[in-house]
Image (cartoon, rainbow, N blue to C red; front, side, top):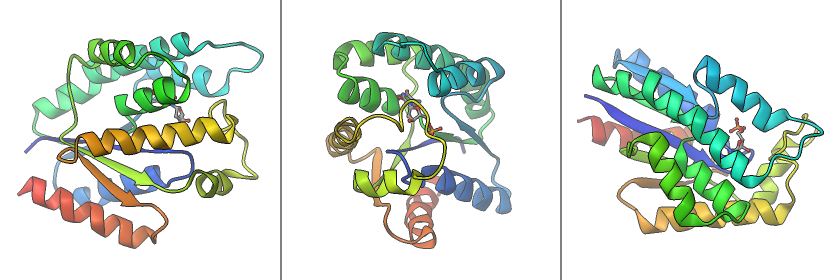
Length: 204
Ligand code: TMP
């Protein structure tokens, strides 16, 4: 049975760890599953993603971010997500278009409806059946990243990250059927168990 799940959250929330953990659990149960991520997930998208995260000395404006994330996404949807869903797999994506709504609209200030329209063009309207939001206070997430090399987004000031978090909570509030909000300050095992409870229900 195909199911599309994305993992979302602010910096340092632990979503990639949980996406991998769910992938391993499904694989061990012999449930056909793939794990991919944004930005990237295709050779083309990985190149764009490196630019977006690590470009130095270039002023990339919010609208350019919007278009580049969506160029990478359009390739991922066409080449990876749609074909795998079509063969009945579970597709786990570490970030999807909700990241663009929160980072480029709530965070950078781009018009929400414009962002939604461009996201929609890139995804061809494909929405996940489940979106897991790992939520935690911004300062705690950023503290987990301290001491590591910071990308363009991690370098954003705390108010930027607070707007991103508020954006996520608003999206989740507006669509509780699709969103599962998990307190990311719990242990990895506890978080994995909460996610598993929801996923196993959906796969029944
Ligand atoms: P990550 O690989 O640590 O998740 O980093 C990806 C960064 O890119 C993260 O800071 C969020 C940001 N991002 C956006 O701003 N918009 C998007 O659409 C996506 C997918 C990611």
